[in-house]
Image (cartoon, rainbow, N blue to C red; front, side, top):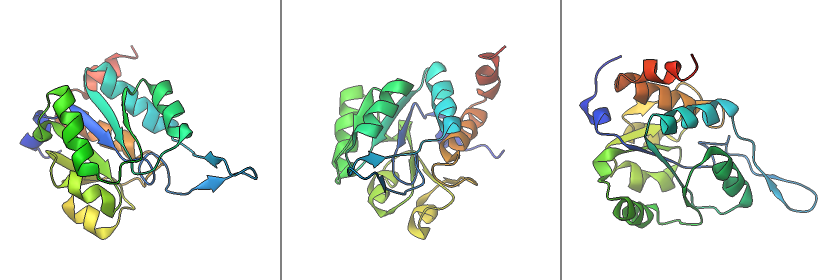
Length: 172
């Protein structure tokens, strides 16, 4: 893996939801309730990232209970939903955590993610992201959103930080 000095500073991973943690589909049941499908591989990757002392945040323009439930299950405390102006939401989050944008990696897939991706230290696109997001990314996953892309992004970051063996040691 080629060394990228920007990764060394990364302390937080910010994730979009639809198209990143999910495949981007919106499923509605007969009662109009939204149902989201999340990858267990992504969940494990996020747990590894957190157990090694790093932060995770969710930043999404949509609002829903499924995201709240999944975030709680994964121990993600920084969940910002219903914010189409993701740039201002990023600034608010960074201010509350006393982090600089250079210490953040973000995984995105579509145009609303671009303002944040252009500000953070290490932008990541999922494999099926729109071309503009892929062009803005320092790294593009081989996996599409909702199918292990977040796990791949975490593994990429941990390997670049020389922390992958630490992650594996959590299961010895």
